[in-house]
Length: 83
Image 1 (cartoon, helix red, strand yellow):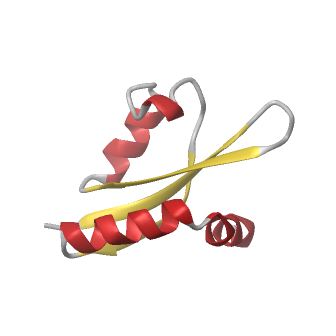
Image 2 (tube, one colour):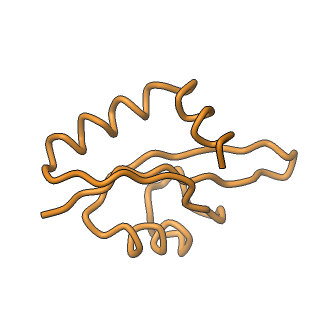
Image 3 (tube, rainbow, N blue to C red):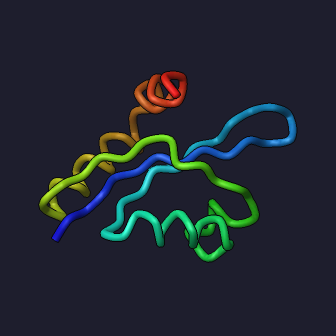
């Protein structure tokens, strides 16, 4: 099965951006759920835009990469600024 690690971004009223990192086996459905308010509690009530994703063949590898990206705010910022 294929897994994805993804980074989504939402703009706040004060022109600041917030980001969220997650993993899934169905990327399109997961982003849709976030935008419908049915995703993680942190993501509810905001409009999200997919800015980055990476494909993995194993769940364990995807989880490791998700953890790395979640904890590395500098890398997140670098990815967001590339877009």
